[in-house]
Amino acid sequence: MNEPTPTSDEPEGRRRRITVRQSVRTPGLTAPAIGRAVRAAAGARPIHAVNVTVTNDATMADLHARYLNDPKATDVLAFDLTGPGTPEEAIDGEIVVSADAAARMSTKLGVPARQEALRYVIHGVLHLCGGRDATPAQRRRMRRQEDRVLRELGWSLPASGTRRSTGGAGRSSRQGRS
Image (cartoon, rainbow, N blue to C red; front, side, top):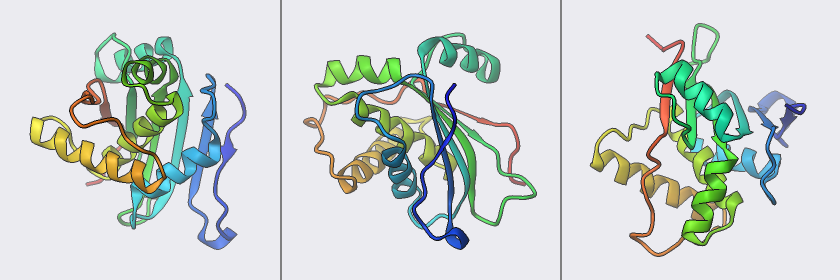
């Protein structure tokens, strides 16, 4: 993987640590754009540390099998890393996004691959903020939140009903908040 890219342009004392690694490149998807998506999805929630990795289906399948006991590739995984050193209510986690899944779905939906990849980043942040998508109602609520953040970031969205759920998204809590 390449070197992590810090994305914050805030003063040192207020900096929210967001690190981006892209082992697979998606045209137009930049570390600053990913950082903006993380901050927008987090809203008022403080960010202790969020690491975003953009990778391929093979790596996603390996991680999905290792942490969620499912050998299939998925589009996004979110790992909640909150622990004793995490400030109250702050987000501390790892988000892994499949550039391959974003490319496939973007072709199907007729949207840029970078927009689809940003949707996955946003989805991961929403999981780190406690969002769930186990039921149809939860999936609809999360989809509305994703759409709101994408619009806030300046993206236009495909017509309603053409979207699928971010089906394979998983959440793994290696260290949960008590």
